[in-house]
Amino acid sequence: MMSTSLVVVVVIVIVLMVVELGVAQTTNNITNSTDDTNTPLLVFCGSNDAMDLTTFSKNLNSTFSLLRSRFSNIGVFYATAQELGDSNDAVYGLAQCRNYESVTQCLAYFDVAVSAVRPCGSSIGANIYLDNCFLKYENYNQFYDDPEGTSDTPLAICSNKSTTQQITDFNRVVQQLLSDISVATPRTSNFYTASTRQVTSGNATIYAIGQCVENASQAICKNCMLTAYNNLHNCLPSNEARAIALGCFMRYSEFPFFQNNQTLNLVPFLGAGSSSKHGLILAVSSGAGVLFLILALSIWFWRRKRSSVKELEGGQSYNYNYSDSKKATNDFSDEHMIGKGGFGEVFKAIVDNEIVVAVKKLHVGSRAKEEFENEVKLISSVRHRNLLLQLGWCSDGPELLLVLEYMPQGSLDKFLWGEKKGTLNWKQRFDIILGIARGLAHLHEEYHVKIIHRDIKSSNILLDNDFQPKIANFGLARLYPEDQSHITTQFAGTMGYTAPEHATHGHLSEKVDVYSFGVVALEVISGRKSSDVNYSGAEMEYLLNQAWKLYETDTHVMLIDDALDPNEYQEEKVKTIVEIALMCTQSPASLRPTMSQVYLMLSNEPALRQRRMSRPTFVDANRRIHIGEN
Ligand SMILES: *[C@@H]1O[C@H](CO)[C@@H](O)[C@H](O)[C@H]1NC(C)=O
Ligand SMILES: *[C@@H]1O[C@H](CO)[C@@H](O)[C@H](O)[C@H]1NC(C)=O
Ligand SMILES: *[C@@H]1O[C@H](CO)[C@@H](O)[C@H](O)[C@H]1NC(C)=O
Image 1 (cartoon, protein in one colour):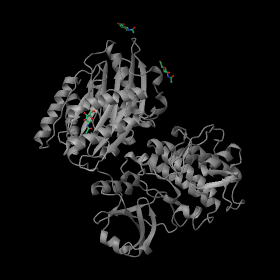
Image 2 (cartoon, rainbow, N blue to C red; image 1 turned 180 degrees about the vertical axis):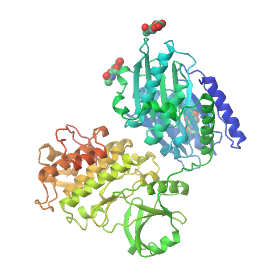
Image 3 (cartoon, rainbow, N blue to C red; image 1 turned 90 degrees about the vertical axis):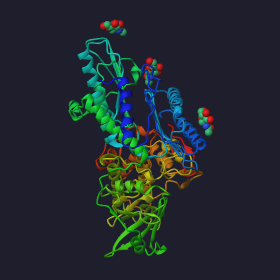
Image 4 (cartoon, protein in one colour; image 1 turned 120 degrees about the vertical axis):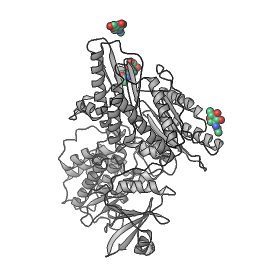
């Protein structure tokens, strides 16, 4: 059993160890009582100081107020924000509230966290944990995409009061509840569960929640939850305990800390995975647990010093040589240029035995090479027939280059409204829609890291010689800093395709891609660009709006591209696909199906037409929001 005082001791032991290892870091621990939920559970201040205290303090204040403004939106419990300034004292922040809180509560707890972290002074990094809030800032941002990976071991903080219930019964109920929470949380769409359970022999109700940071992968969440469960297990029979970590939070209590109507039915998320195994996987005795913890925290400190070195399973991706790539593209000449996009120009290259590949010159600013390599290794290991294959990369020259599969037919937009307009028949169009759905389902649900594309649009879909689609540029959005993107021009997405919650609040989930997919599907059917307005009578109409209006009067068959031969398609089938596309563009995002559901609906004959739908909300090319209402 680990009491609060033991935690303090552990932290001191770690500090000693770290100092012995020669890593100059210290920790301030201002933990006291855990009874008051507004008392910090733990505060870690880094010992590296800001170069210029005034600039740093300005950046820190600005990061805090950006984070705070995110939390003033309903339904936002997780936010990242940064202030880079023009100096070395950039501040990257991340904060999380618990999903049972109201906007007012979340803001109040965030303010508590901010004041509690002020004593860290000029430290360029800090972590603070409260029951109701978690706040972290650093002068780097790797933790946005990888909340310290699987080495992130949750620390258990146990109340020193034991339960007044009958102990074996209490322990059994808490264990079962936490085990269920650890299984269910990674399976929910927002990585959060809250549940209660009755102690059968007594009169107590146990309240418990599980929460992972929203940008963790499912694997990280699962791992973190399992360890949290095992560590809390060691707190029993404490009447209350929490496990804290960078990647997740778990808490149980004999006292209510959320409303009875805020619970989630866990049953649908429990499924086949047997929960009884958990104890075996990571059954650690207290002693071993402390050692494990020391190791994990040492790694954490070490990572704070150096930028993180991710170990990713690489596909067979090659590190190409810059001068060879330059030669193969004839010095990146205009004749070799085959495309130009937000991320850079693409060139056709002839390498060795006349194998043609595409070389993309990336404009990703001064991002560290190491970080770039980690990203491209990740992208390289994704292989699927509907995803553009990345053959390798090159980071030894003045620009960062990606070496990609060459697609002779070019991008889908050319076939819809560009130079090859009207040349795709209905079967080809349907196969393209289906293929994009399959590729996205793989990125979201089948690959071991969930990858959100963020910029699905017709010009990012390439066609091979059989007119099968391949999604390009996936993973690249990760190379852009996710800063004030949704407010400023830097936002990683394209108006006309972007889900409203992403464009306006920066909310990011795989449903952002589902929305863009719906828009692309309508473009493929109509041969019209989403952002172009159509003059129907006196009214100017965007594609999405027009599709909805036609659907309302059951005339959506009129959306079909005139270039298509009516003998090639069945009207009913096209109408169904329009309906599926509209379903994908609904708001809020929770109304949209997942990509694997979309794929199933497209490939089977679905009985979905009964589903009630609402008018889509969209953001037009001038960034005006058109709110859907019905
Ligand atoms: C940042 O905020 C703190 C607390 O409100 C304040 O004391 C400090 O002067 C601010 N720093 C700057 C540079 O504005
Ligand atoms: C529950 O039972 C305990 C004794 O078993 C008692 O002290 C306590 O007051 C009871 N609580 C409630 C809410 O009835
Ligand atoms: C939940 O219960 C609280 C009071 O117990 C009430 O104020 C609130 O409206 C309820 N919420 C829902 C969604 O029913």
